[in-house]
Length: 536
Image (tube, rainbow, N blue to C red; front, side, top):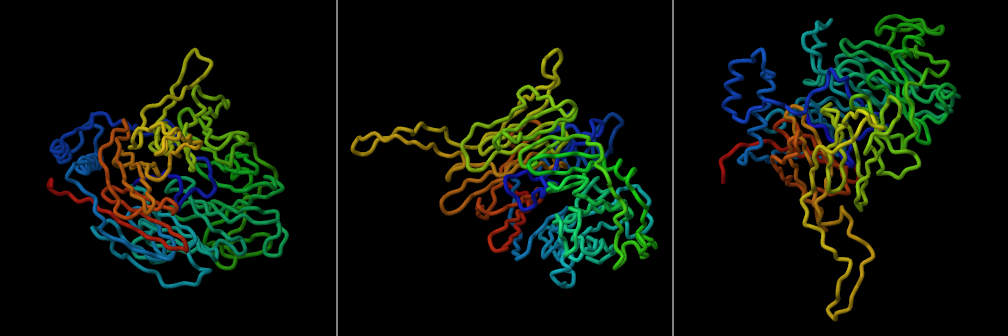
């Protein structure tokens, strides 16, 4: 699956929360040593199976074969399907969702085919947000339906639905509670724990005085069971809270202007859980008795925090943008007093700045640069500007005032003509004219990097580059070696790419999905499939 990291996408992080990387013991190496160039040898090894000293398994060999076939000159990507919609379009693991997740198409086949379409519902009952759940292999589950891939969806009238990803049948329903306005769902721990979050509430909500700013309902997913419901109280966490998130067991609270605090959610549950609540069982809560998860009782707010928990980490940062990753743990942020585009890379241990840890790209552009920890867990960092992609890594230092140094591993440059010094020109009559404004790095006619993706199964970096003219924009997807940055293939997109529109692009094995959002709620989905042919 390709992970998109772009300038403007339709599925951006709503809360700009920290990203995290797993511990060193669980990280994967981006350099796949011992990989073979010969497809025939890979096929032979697949048929014979893995050997004790071999790092290969059948899936890895299959992906290596696919990667080598994909990068051949004779392999093309052809647009096979287009569909338009007046509602948002989403893609999750081989499934394309239309009409607020109520209509699903499979992209596994050569041309996408409809899997199901759910009955029409009122606007208040529509699905607001959803994620895909797939059960872990080898674990016994209580019910046969738990093994079915499913969509966990939160609706506009505060229901959590578990829907079969293949048929659209509702497998389970949980009423979250009236007057809380749950809207977002995300992973705390992928394929293990989910968090359903409300919109931000004002002090007066539904004509009732309330100190609650957010509510977060946390569930284990296999089987679906309630961990608890946490209330973010302005008297405990502060009245300037702007957003909250739970990820990897860490409660992240964002404040204005530009302050991020991290807390241990596990400690909060251990110390502040008032009562265990089980979905489907009778519960007595504050004098009211009902069935947990049934209408109208819903879910009790059984995690009550009366005083602020110990802060694990806090930092003042521009626009609450904080990213966490690397090993040992580092974080990337822009100080409040700095301009956007100045990124600091510091150790979480003591806030010390790494050598070369202040990253600033020298360019002149309307769009800012952006920086992320690499999603392949290689502890690297990707820094992207309009015409340059720098892949950086942290190097440990000894006997030095700095503990770590940021060094460039490789760079990818945009395909551009060398800049000519045109500050001084001459008219036809010979009069000299001096220009006061330089050309922007993302001006019309120049190739600009729009997004970077990582395809984890193929271990490839995908770079979306766009050349925008006065009439339209031409985009292509470049496949680069994740270890060296060497370009392996170019895939030209047939449709025009308007840089003023929002775009999402997914690369999933042999499929490219391009989703575009145009003004007035007009959405389009373009699907490309890999085709192997002879040299023309």
